[in-house]
Amino acid sequence: MYNISNLPNHLKEPLTILSHRYGFSISEKGRNLSFTSTDKPYIDITADEENIIIVSNHLSGFFRGIGILIEQEQNGTLCFHLHEDSWFDFNGLMIDCSRNGVVSIPYIKELIEQLAVMGHTMLMLYMEDVYEVDGEPYFGYMRGRYSKEELKMLDDYAFQFGIELIPCIQTLAHFDQFLSMDTVRDEYIDIDNILDVSSPNVQDLLRRMIHTLSSCFRSRRIHIGMDEAYHLGRGRYADKNGLRSKHDIMSEHMDFMLSVCKEYGLRPIIWDDMFIHYQTRFDTGQRSIPEDIDLMYWDYYNNTEEHYEKNLQMRASLSSHLMFAGGAWKWTGYAPHHSKTIASANAALSVCKRQGIRQVMVTSWADDGCECPISACLFGAVLFAEHQYNETIDMDSFQHRLKFITRLDYETFMKQEEFDIFPSFSNRAVTVTPSKYLLYEDPLCSLFLLQAESIQEDLTMHYQNLSDYFYSKARDCSIRSLRAALSFYGSFGSVMALKWNLGLNIYKAYRNQDKIALQSIIENQLLPLIPRLEFMNEMRRREWYITNKSFGFEVLDYRIGALIQRLKTTRTILSSYINDIIPNIPELEEERLSISKFREEGMGEIIHFNNAERSRTTNRTGWV
Image (tube, rainbow, N blue to C red):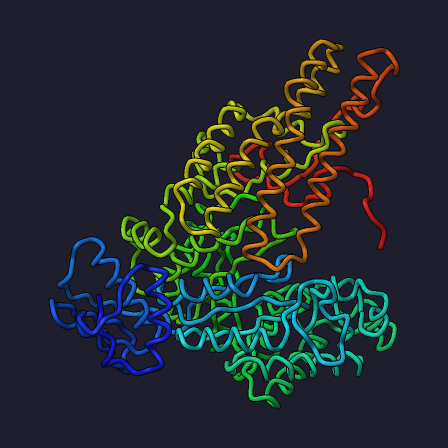
């Protein structure tokens, strides 16, 4: 019970909101709570039986202090003193709102509350085309774009918790969905998903984008992207301007965007990859990144400190305003990879601290359709927060903080990755995705037989055990979004118990000319799978509608619906073969080849393959 009468009014409303989330009381009879600001980067908490004093240089420190206070009290400790130095001045989460899942307003508010208690300073919204732009009705059309009013409301909500809400957009490439509209493509495209940066129409569009966002956010920072435009200047740009150096085009566009941002009082952040790519690299001494731009080095693939030492030093030669972005791995299918998050983040952030990089963030991408529930990002967000306030991470302390903030224990988070990271793996920090490609694999045109055959474990039992585990956890979970995610994972395990080796079993039985085995597969594996898939799809829909706007789920409907139909078709074809109506099944006659040349060290045929469409067939599923 806390007496907040001595606090400034702007802190009372967010504390009231947090009291509902974390179960503490506000009363004049409680201990006196006060907040003192300092210009030093630390948090200091002194609590006795009558008074609580929190000292910090930022509101994020105050709200982290509140979280620590509540956690200590719940553990039976009322009187204590705690001091934490802050290793970062800028730290937070970037959530992907552009891969079909546009995060819902209520769930963003929930994230803001949790980020505040973690001690984070900012939240970025990654929006390729999912925000309103004046005069551009096809920008985010039927994609669930945010209105200007929604963005302003979120900015107000974040501000009261000391969270800087920052737009993270694209101003060069990654305009796949917008440029798929033939109503606008010819007006703006260079090639692929890249804008024709020499076009007056494109420059006008970019100005309107910046104008819109500058009016919606308090922050004077804006992330303008400019990454992965590797065919820059090789389409219509070249037709109009001739073949020019990508380096020169990139340099001119960077200067243009900087001038636009300056018009609106904004300081841009850009991704780093185009400035070190072999055709556009800036580390040759020709020029550096302007002082008015922050360069963000993104890397979540590597697990060694030596790698990050080398790459941070390389980028330091380009810019004196260097930032770092790691990753909360939830973009490789339905299952997150938390072990990879731990390994890559611990290595990278340790180096950032040694090299004095004080601006970092954790990205939470949603590649290939936002299949994974968004709550998986909380794991990486808590990890990055603990790195901010600790020189080295104590995993026991991290686990306690994770459970307090999210209400979900470490073991349950780690169980989520076991759909891909099997118990026998000696190295868990890998990015293989068997649950994705074995889910989507066509039962007749089975492309991953080598992968399924190489698995030594009894995955039927493994996946069923995961199903039972998550259903049990869901029953005990009181947080609506987490309960929906856990229920989904229960249904996912039930599906994978039947689906993981369906293609392999059909192929083997057919090649052995064993029609009795084929009939058994139909009755005991294929047909029972259909209602399980239907239920899994419903569980995923329920979680989606809690955490995202409704737009975009139709893609997952198409994927699972198509799989269900293929199972029905497969039953018809197998039955026709069993009953001698057809002499053979051509799809099962063809010898299988390896589907990918890429291998992770020590993983053999268990590969990383993160593409739903290409997991199903080598035929085209659409024409552009």
